Amino acid sequence: MFPEPGSLFPTWKSTFVKRVTFPSGKQHFVGCGLYNMAMDKAFIEDVVNRAATLIAGQGKRAFSQLRDKTGPFVFMDTYVFVDTTDGVEVVNPAQPSIEGMNLIDAKDVKGKSLVRDYIAAAMKDGSAWVDYYWYKPGQNTPVRKESYVRKVQSGQDIYIVGSGLYME
Image (cartoon, rainbow, N blue to C red; front, side, top):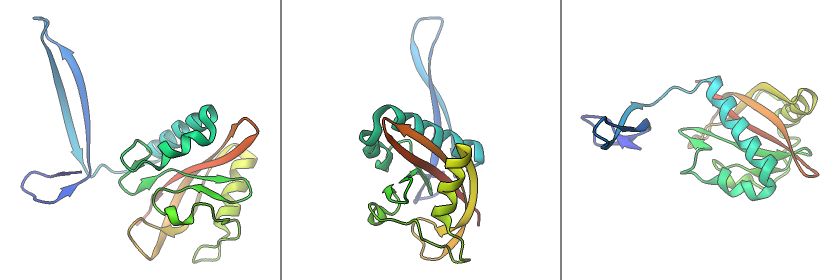
């Protein structure tokens, strides 16, 4: 979060920085930034795949990293969520109050069984894009969301890892 030029209020800024060595041997950092970067499906798939790799290797120990709002799995209004195959939400940094709840029978405002549907899609195909209506962080009215979900196994445990784009 950093104010745009001419503004007092911070907004999301994505920055790329690279260390370079000049011919003299002196090192410098070169970088550039972009305010309010648009989310796209490639970004969502990448963050879900990185989270799945982390869970596959660390199991439940990875959950604290996924919940870290300053870490790489929470960005702007996008976050990684994790469910068990029977519908218990075990990670949700945007709505921590629903962690531990079984959401298998949850329906969106249009009557879609969203959790049941995305678990079934991930279990059948390994990964899938699904759409439903869900609450955008900080808002109390559901909006259309497209989520990428992926099945991941750690030892004997199987999880559904997902993240999505809010389509306003």
